[in-house]
Length: 278
Length: 329
Image (cartoon, rainbow over all chains, first blue to last red; front, side, top):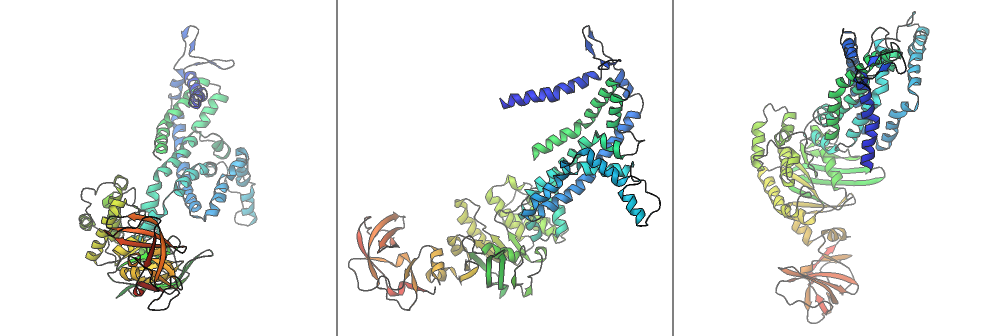
């Protein structure tokens, strides 16, 4: 009963929308609502490969994809390092502090996503808190160009995705056997060696899972780069958005969405394997 | 020669007193057992010696050197954990070589091969711990602890995780190994039979203090206190003034071994009591009889072949004055 319900939900909420997007990529753009003619109509096949031709016509979309993958990798890498450190800190705190510390990690989720981005804008813009403070302190005379930069974008990305890295690593580290680390110390390993030879290798699957858990959604992120990033570098998510809502070329947007999914298929499969292994 | 000296060590966890100004000396080449129930402080003492805990007061000296403040990696002590704590991501060879590598050994292979041969682990070198039986894991843990030839080896309930069939043989192997290596072994156990069978000397711990330190035979025949006599289990503890006791020395209570009680045809004036048999257990070589004497249950062991009374029978029990071991508290 529950099983068939789950299959039904997967069919309706995952498989069906995916098929619609996949099919739309082979449709034809046309004015109207929706602005697309489906690839299969009353007379049979009426689709085209125009959209796929368009996205591979020049390197515009390929560059956007590479930029997105690069941003996702850097974000995931930073989240992994910071998240591992925080997870280590949380799990080695006194037991009564662990739950409150974990709650603090989740606290940002209680405020709206857009609100948090707006806060970064307020902090970083030319007349914002940071620049105003620095000018008042006499450290600078002209405001620093903090906002709409690669740095601001990374800051927003890491801030937004960090909890996804902290949670799986914390869960794994909290279950670790302290006797193993004691045994290593007893056999002559200093603190750093214990970490490098025992703690880290045993948490490696969780760390890889945390990396992918950030990498996968970060690759398609639209809003954070749009609000905080430099306007000239188009990312993959932004490109999809543009085709859907600005040029209203839905077949191209659908083809791009399918391509993004194909790009992420390998990391998603890897994540699945790691989750099962744990 | 003293290898390890514990001097007035006190350890508190919050308000609970785990060790209460405990002092103890362990000799070089000695097999020493720390025997006690749960909460007696025996495991805390082992963790203090290994360096995982710091005492609130007192000193620990190893080979004359004060190691109280030294972190675990700097102590010439190796511990075998009750759960073995084998590294699951390393095979047998890497587990055994771990301590050698930390000591800067470039090529640990010869020493690893030596330990593999010593503990009969041939053919298992490439296996991961989870692919080993409990007995094999125990031997790997022991090999790993022995790798750097520590003068002092700590064993936390070394036999507790083994099947009962394997326990006795492994215990004897452990002692033979200790004799051969000449290192001092300090074993924590809650099993009095294990402690008495394996150790040169046994310390009985009770509420963070040492109730008695003695060789197994002395401990068995002359327990110092009621707590020790009760913990060692088999002995009857008789309060002074009962059963017309007449002993060689005055004491508040006495321990009376079950094999020293006899069934008598008539009731003498001293050191005897009428009793009613409640339980009989024939054990092959001998028979255990439980009898109720004026509200106190007495255990006696009758040699095999002796005529056994029926349950419920009224009998007379007696013993020699010399059989009464005085208890100080």
